[in-house]
Length: 200
Image 1 (tube, helix red, strand yellow):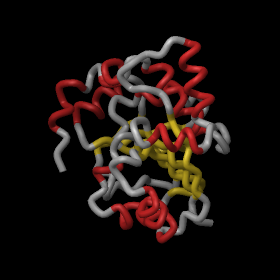
Image 2 (cartoon, one colour):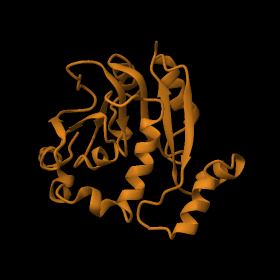
Image 3 (cartoon, helix red, strand yellow):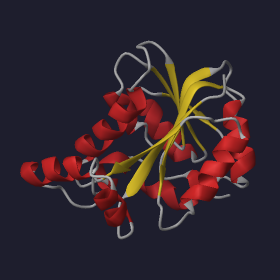
Image 4 (cartoon, one colour):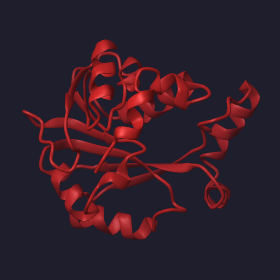
């Protein structure tokens, strides 16, 4: 696996990747923090420049990335970041939550990867999933096989490349909870945020 294509964009990764990076990262952070206690450790695999850390105050945020420039950028942003491959990395101690955003496709063997996460994650794993790229039922089966019994799929209607005006953003957020309509929208664009409770 190579991540060299990201080296030149590491310094401004979060700023350049999202039209409204604050909203995008804040909404992710809300879903990650739900059900966790302040002070608990959140491990962010494929953390990029660690931009998510600013939206998780009070948590022990730690990042891992395979790209050296990304790790260096995260450290300049005050993030405790390490160089590592998400398929093999093991934190020095168990963590409350593990997140993987825009990177689940880097898992060489997804079922084995979920078992690996289960070995050191105590509360939950959170990641984004494009239902047009992956068979959701197959991914849920892989999670179940790894021991993740309780899984929540939350539609996430925050565009990456377009900043919505406030009324449109409120509408998009309400549509996330619209059931069948949300699932219909997901056939065309946007992603799920998947939260899987760690095996007890």
